[in-house]
Length: 231
Image (cartoon, rainbow, N blue to C red; front, top):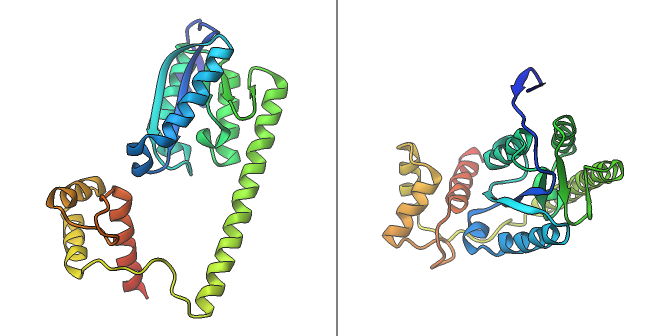
């Protein structure tokens, strides 16, 4: 039993040559198509086979990578490693695990304290070695810097386009009746997934005709409506 951040964490002797594979995509569309997850799984399984690792579980999560706190399945996988169920958490690349240097640093620190490893296949390194820890952190810093630069360029480009009077985004062709139905269901405390499922069952077309409704699609309609009201 060890204490971490004021909480009791129970551990038991772990088998070093065991791994949990963690896969993640950001949207329902990617999750349902399986394409993003399949590529990650092949990469991670390849890595485990080459290194003689027994895979005890493959975790598939559909969630944005902006914050580790919102990813329950990742947290559960890390807890299993902390308890000794696996010696290594394997992801296809560092961005599947964390997209902020703060989250990544906490994850690495916790892994080190509880004596399990974290591996990102794209680096070919893992945190069981000092070199792996250093490179992992450097990659996290570089990824965060790149995202900040991209975000800054995007914001400047959008501001410039607005200043020129350019209409941003694809034209919205959805009827006001559909939008009203979505807003009514949302007011009735329906979740985004429930609303999407209802629209699909009713055969309601999206703004792009024939496309399937997803929670993310419903969310965009609601945000667009709210932005029009605010304007």
